Length: 204
Image (cartoon, rainbow, N blue to C red):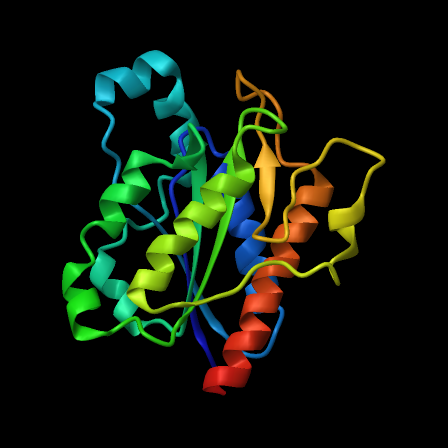
């Protein structure tokens, strides 16, 4: 049994929906222990309320907030982040910046790491967000896993859809009105299962 963590930040719920799909995929392989966490919020509450994010976040308020040290207990960690100008969000960056003790001790070396993301637009930095996230994972010693093209939904050209070989993605629209499509959620489930299979081979 592998211990798999899904750690995400979501402002309006798009990345949360993808996180749940990732977890479903990870649970579909073997008898894995899959836990979902969110990272701490940094935006002042009054700004969350004014933007409507506070109300949207109630749907995943039950998800526990992670301390970075919990990653030391995992065999694999799958991270989810919205894009902020082609990079991970500040909340996720802040979370990762607290991993110095894990880095110094080598506690994350050899664990499996993977990333999924969301953007407002179709070409809004999905790939740069994930690949720049990978740089941090390499520094921490993770074995980085993406989404191979054996996942045929990456080749779907019949609709607008997220999905990259680096990780699952979704497109939220500028006003957040677009929700993850079935194609995007299916790619996320594939990613979760793919990470679980590789983790099982390494730690099984």
